[in-house]
Image (cartoon, rainbow over all chains, first blue to last red; front, side, top):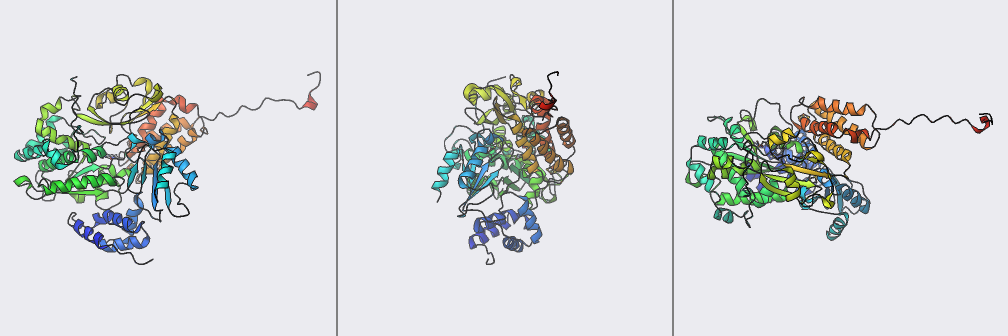
Length: 158
Length: 434
Ligand SMILES: Cc1cc2nc3c(=O)[nH]c(=O)nc-3n(C[C@H](O)[C@H](O)[C@H](O)COP(=O)(O)O)c2cc1C
Ligand code: SF4
Ligand code: FES
């Protein structure tokens, strides 16, 4: 893999953000978000790059990345399907949604389809309990789903 | 109690999220008014209104603001808490989407009242869409001179930054939120020192929930007396009640405090599908204690009434379970959540949450033994009150209440040691005489 390097847009955005905080350490989450957006996941090389940009030890960046659930420390499919399995969704079929989606795609939760198109993960409450069951695909929420509706949705995403 | 049907936080006004529409409906006039008052007067107004925090702990907001030092040689900070990760809670997101300026205006008034020049709003990472909506509103407010240098020609200036979390329930806890904002892992801090003395980067800091701050403009424009008469007098105002689970019309309903729980379930949320009986209700998000279905009659949604019912108002996130629900599966799922979200700093929480989940899984699978019931309660009791932050309590409370209220459900899952088979003599021993 080539050495990672932020796009000019990201570098500018990061520079603008520097004025917003008294130190550079608080930029670690914003920088990691930019990294995930640009590279898809946070590899060890990316951690090193972000650490260098913010003048932080790599071990610190590693500690932050692994503390949070939303940073992917391994590659994910083009579509990251995150199915809520917490209580309100469970009461409305969230468990079945995860199980059936996985069996249709012939993968287990946390795995990616062979064509690297879809990763399915079970996640905690998405704050969509009133429109349960809920699924987050990349940045977008999809609500009031059934296994059938989710299948249609996934077929439409190409 | 007086009937109050006005919606303060989420009124039915089309496109209220747009700054022009917000202004046309009186928006930012409370900020104008506050800027003509002395900061102490603003704090006093909020204090007298009796507004209490909507983030879960119900702490009196004006009182919290008085903890901030008036004079400080260090910068002071306001953190608006939009982490919203408590299962069953989905209300702050409505504010970001439908009335972001009300929250922004409230935060600006709070900043003015406490002499704060930097506001951070921390929003959970999953809310990418709502972060964009909020950011757009913030940009508009900057453009119109409500945020920035010398706001509306006054001597007051403040910056407003939206910070995106990255998936961790614990970052909603105020000290974990500050660590996360500082670029650390989101570990809660030992208190004291409290944030008002030693918050962000060691400076005086106040943390308030999004909905809490959204109440402030109304208090300033219409006065503390008016506000203090809405709903329950000890905890006045409206609350964005989120109701989910087995109801026909789940969603967010803005109603005065003290509204009957049964009214929210039946009148507003349309009752239970198939008119089934209610077996259990969680009244204020997953960390609050459960109430048995038979006991919800007469319970009002305010701090005192829920306390009397053995629970608390929490975030106002109501979860309804009908008679066919496998309650043991639900409490096991909740225990899994807290185990997953424990940051691992303190032993009673880290180990205890693991045990709660493990023991409950045994009940779920019908593999529990007689002693597991007492063990379960014992573990929960040993977590409560023995941890750095309230996540430990949040994990213990639902389990404690479950054992008290639904002992029968658990006992039914205890594995019966099969009785030794009766002795049947093999055929060759059976004689005609026996
Ligand atoms: C584990 C845990 C999670 C919390 N999550 C949130 C949250 O998502 N949003 C929130 O406003 N408060 C949350 N709180 C409460 C905050 O610590 C804090 O009390 C609150 O933000 C203060 O705001 P208020 O006084 O306006 O209610 C949480 C507390 C704990 C212990
Ligand atoms: S109580 Fe739990 S979440 Fe809170 S600091 Fe201790 S281990 Fe972390
Ligand atoms: S429980 Fe699924 S979104 Fe809240």
